Length: 288
Image (cartoon, rainbow, N blue to C red; front, top):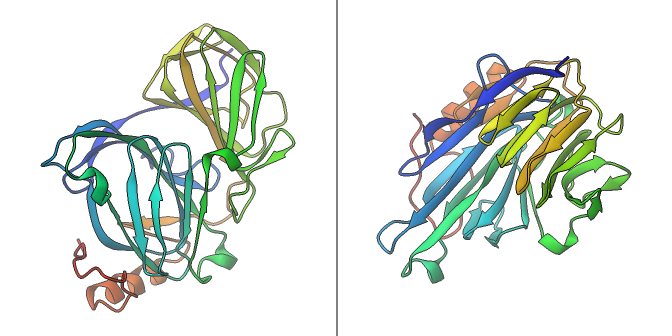
């Protein structure tokens, strides 16, 4: 009997001049634990005339997690953070009451062809922290917990699981774990994973019971259980989830909140350009 309750396929979505594969939110599943948004960027080949330029735009009520496989992005925000994101590192920006940021191709790559490939993730904040002060943390790749089990390589990108803790300062019980293997391997995730859980098949395929699932899918667990899996050779998956919140989360554009009134306030603030500015940047994304 399958432990999978729902299968979500990547859908094409535009973020300006760049197409992504959108996985969350989905009409039948708006969130997995505190995870409310997951975009797969690329892989895209950018030439000297094509750049990744997401102009300054606002967020409230969430933390953003950026994780790259290839390429680089320059992050700037209204807190004053300026950070070049490279593959394997984690950018963790908590918007809270409001933050503005831009994401661009770094100057050093704008005159050469290069690839861009990664994940953009939004994690909702607990109701008590939705209006906290914004913050920014960058964690280098070699700071993340890494281990091997049965020829599979595990990396704990955020949260706590399997007795390990990522240095990414999350705000509720959650986990986001990369699992990769060059060989076919069997995994028993057992009871060490908590809350709602799902896995994103990034490369290769997964066998769950008698079913084979290919890349580009999220498998959402039935009754919070995904236990026994088999990875095909050269596969990479992301196991993620955590404790869900008791309140529904509303999403409108880049705003996430348990209260629609806070989203309306944020919409008006952005329309009037009352959010803090990104130092040195004058362009911005208009309110839709």
